[in-house]
Each structure stands twice: as structure tokens, then as C-alpha cells.
Length: 69
Image (cartoon, rainbow, N blue to C red; front, side, top):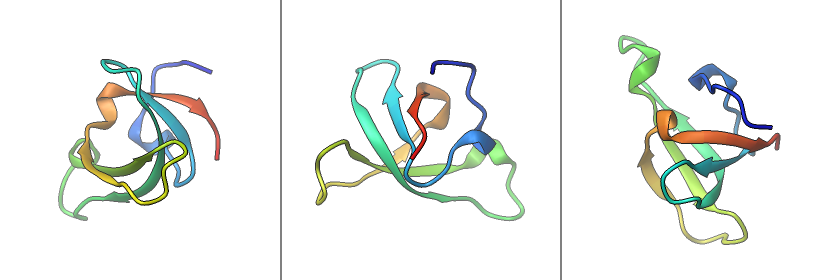
């Protein structure tokens, strides 16, 4: 399901892959200021299959969509 991803395409629960490392993660949250451009979104995600670890600051430009949540 690889395509050019826009930050507005991402939803909580989506499975994404880091283009550089190949690590698959599930999006658990997104944060941005109403005054900031959408390019300044902070993505929170956890590795697929791991419930207790959450990564903060994943750049959405380095992600590709694997599967809709």
C-alpha cells in the first residue's frame, strides 16, 4: 500500500514503516500546534506488537503507510 504519504493521510491505529530502518510501528497519537504548519507534526508510535514502548518525534516524512488501522 506504499504511496506518497501526506501527514493528513495518517490516522491513529495505522501501521506505518520507517523508510530508513524498516521498523513497522502503529500510530498512537499526533500533536501539532494550531499556529504551526502541518509539516511540524509530532508523531507518536509504538513498534508493532509491543504495547509498552512509544516513540516520540517520528518524522512523518520518513514513514510509509503499510496498513490502515
